[in-house]
Image (cartoon, rainbow, N blue to C red; front, side, top):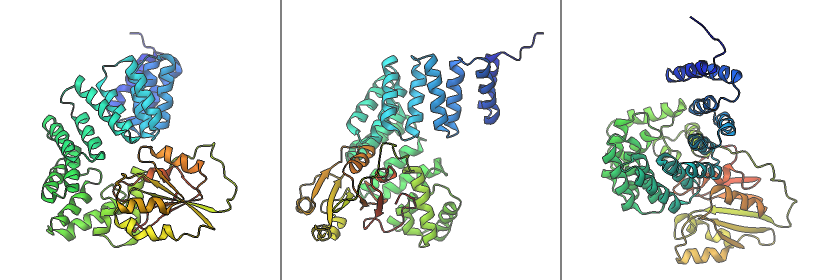
Length: 411
């Protein structure tokens, strides 16, 4: 029998088998061996990229996909998975480009269309995202993930009944889809249908007991339904999860079950690490010269009839204009009510940015040379923490709307 130690394909196949066995370090070593033997082995680069992404090493995965695409530029799967790595890195605009390139090569890829929709959602381009999900569903009727994602896009557009219909269709396709149950429950919570929302979370938690932030939302909803059964035990379970670094509760919900500042801070840090981790500041951003007036930017979804606006309107109106120039960055709806019109007059500059993604808003603030960015939302509904993760200003402050720590170094 002839043995060959220089057989690149055998090393690559061995790596794939090791990957399936979850022996990740050994699998990576085998891929490296295959690539040393054949530096133009595109499939090995692609598979190595998949493994690295699974391990959360997305920057390395991206490099591996790029190597595969240098050899096989028309590899639609590599372009699709490259988009996934970019999305994990929160480089959403680049992810959109990668998915579009994949779809140019293979227009019938329902997975690429679904992934494109998710990237568009992250850019607040919800109508385009819906179109992408619809195209995926035309190719693959009953595609549960695309139905669920359609529901979340519709929810972002405040089309709640249509969102529930999408979640129902997703659950008809996959009754054990825990995330769809949770998303359905969240819409019902927003509609103040508390018993029905709790029932959805009961099901989600039964299917996925360790699901991200499910336990905390379930416990919060039990309180909304005045269901105090086993409350002390469940609060203890949540607190233990927070202290162990697990994703068990949102910072806002944590206020309802814990009054220990250190635990609240840890819950906020866990949430922020998942939802809005610090992002690299683009190298082209340079420090600006001091201004004659300090420029303060207030960022909110609630420049309308809302408690935050009621509490802060007089503050904006009485700023010392000899020392401060104030900007509003509004990413909520223009309701046209009296408070909205009052606030538009209260600021030196009132800018509607609801259709811009986080990166564009942060870049605008930098271009306007904002000195101090004030986040009026914190971790509340319709917040845009990603703007501050991208460093909209040299000094960034959480104020008023969220009475707690953000748990991040960029605030």
